Image (cartoon, rainbow, N blue to C red; front, top):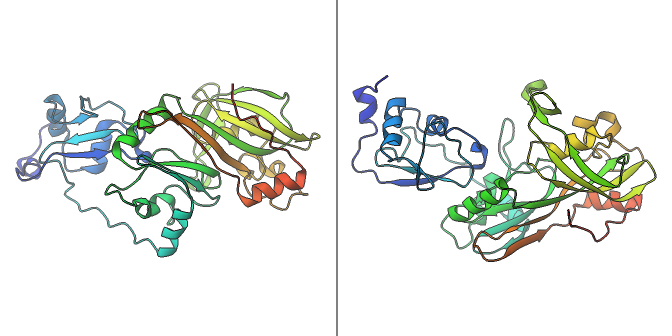
Length: 338
């Protein structure tokens, strides 16, 4: 298949310059050719293959193939003539002063490379169907003294609270994404669960697979045939008889809804998680029973500057603290997963 002269001419302007474009969070695992289809639909397959074959398109400075998978934080080099989509991008909605002030209040750490947010429950990280308000849409308020727009490097579920890291530069985004991908980032979560695990600590090793759900809402389930391996280490921090427990959770893999599905699978759904625990995920004696009790408590990973380690903690939100106090849990002092 060859490209028409008209199509090729659209990309032949000698006045355009080489551009470096960062891969976004929602493009994790996308094939490189699919990435080009998404951003440059008028660039034909043959033209892209030629650019790849001649090394004009590169990923993180290296030659690439159409089938290569890309990851958040990586940088795609676009040669002259492929530096802008022929369709002008939509202008992002204007952020309100209220949203700008709110996201700045979430900041619990800031340096030249990283911003750490303590995300409240109920706020989405990224937009989607019916989601007009989200952290990604507020990031311009976190530029501070930087020209670059901050970049998300990982996700939290909408109703999960706690630590969310944001890279302040493309280079920091790349290094942070590598730390998450290479499992050099240790993430600790706290969860209040209904019921008590069969032992005080251990590892949940159950493969997970995504399945279509009602109203286009994807669900995740244990699938020993087609699922991807998922590992979660857990420790019981405190318990209330057989009724409930406070768990420390360390996800060793990063599957969607991993902690929620794993807890439900061992008979201890996270309090408030009716999606995976149904009515069994509720406690009548807890006032905030219908709110998800999952909190990203701590992250430890190499600092993207290459100097030392970054260790950050976020305090649980009010509803989580109220439940812990009402049940009488002690959070203890142990935060190590080893």
